[in-house]
Image 1 (spheres, rainbow, N blue to C red):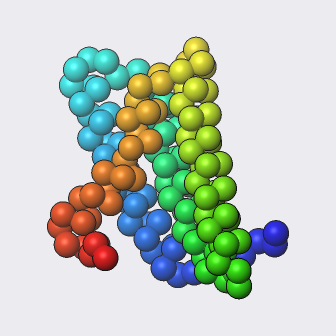
Image 2 (image 1 turned 180 degrees about the horizontal axis):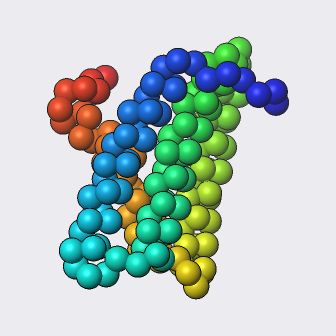
Image 3 (image 1 turned 180 degrees about the vertical axis):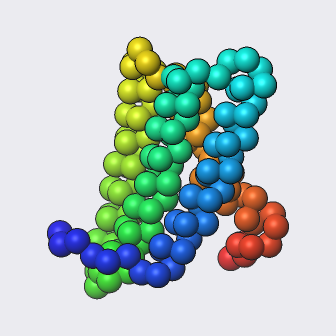
Length: 132
């Protein structure tokens, strides 16, 4: 499978998600600081989850782009299904690594993995994304 340039829409939407994730990350880290629980491990775990969350969203877009070029609908569906499974396994792996590393915190990682979904929800609630 050759590398393919992402469509402008994928780049634009990934940028919007990244901005939302960064805002939620900042809020979470501020809350940890206000509670007196902020550590390097909290920041590292949160960054791991946030980074993978944005990467996951980007890879979703790339999968849809590639599936759209498939001539066989069954092959396109199979591509999307397998990509979903691999991306979810990746999210679990990132969380497990964050919990296993002695210098990272797992809970902030897991919370941060939810930030792309929360960003999408916020965009939907504000009318910036239309449900179809």
